[in-house]
Length: 518
Image 1 (cartoon, rainbow, N blue to C red):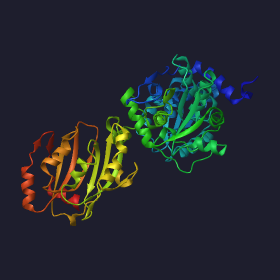
Image 2 (spheres, rainbow, N blue to C red):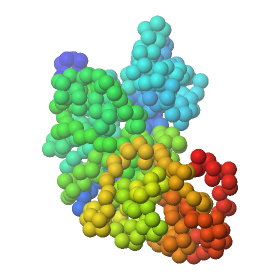
Image 3 (cartoon, rainbow, N blue to C red):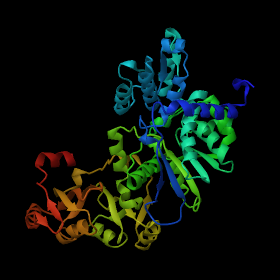
Image 4 (spheres, rainbow, N blue to C red):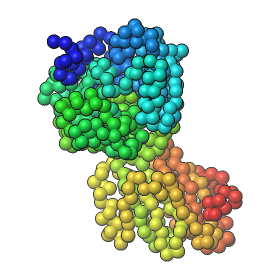
């Protein structure tokens, strides 16, 4: 029987076998490592396929190299053109240089510089980059137009049988690793090429294995396709996980996924960021956001998966350094693997009440973020992010606040004023303000002890800006309001510049203070 008339799943299996003989000309198999969860409690046995250790720091080399290895001499002479958000482009560049084939890569203008530089590094003089549009879809249109006018062969990032087969070789390595069988695989989806190739191959050897697709909540194109019965275009697309930000699932991957996937689950950007942190703390693996999607979903469903052997894939590590910093910053509130909760609490605007709250309702908790600016005369509404290793402790906080008679509200992770640290401060409500820059050792009690020993009863807090960064040294900007200029001078003169676990930096000068209070 001719290969092209076989059912799609059988053709894909056959092409994965052929791909075995091609892809290792361009790179070597990647490791499969066991991940030990950093905190105790029930959970699955997790094995991580480290595609971040591949020649292009992503699994995409497999499909691109396999596709380009089967070009005829006439096709190779015409060259290739492709569109990519970055990882597929690197695979095309790698193959172009190895095979001596000219390649033009169309990438969105917003593509991280680390991915652009990597394309040039892998492809050398054999590859050209064209920045086209602001999205992957616009880059595809530009690349398709290029192919039509130049005659170059278009190499699709995922909707191509040879590309899907190349990606399937990572599953072949899992099967041959000797660490199977696995009960479940939780695999991320962009256009669907990787999950299609991997799921077909894994279920060939382990038919009872459950394959779960994972997508970001703002980019669930395959979930939308399965619901509609065909690939459909998403109206809006979240770009945080840029490697999987595909508006419309591939036609061929969709045909496979509707047969092989048990279900599709979605995860938030915050859950992905947490998974990136877990990968770093356990495997010292720096994953790009899309690379951590599968693990994010497993961690989200940890209790349900307890006792099972689960496979995930770190699909790539091509992350922009600036984005890595923002992710680390967002995870600072949960330092040490702690759970966190953000609350806005109403307290009377009088000296000492802030410390009473810290001493009472927040006793035993870590203050990871503290934002407050005086904006009313009778009431203060400071915002706290509190953390604790045990989530049950955080669940007690509302009861503590209710018992203390406090009015409070829980805030979402994406509250705009909190995320952008928009801290209001009314100058007309201040009498004799002073602003202190404080550095202190990040250990329990240091900040509290400073406030209790040197500020309690002597001044009112009018401003507080502190966020835990994960460093050994914490930094806070503290605003104090005094009843008179004499009291201000006396208190500031009495505070030692250095004390137990803290250091006062140079005073905030008049110009800077004026900018703070308008």
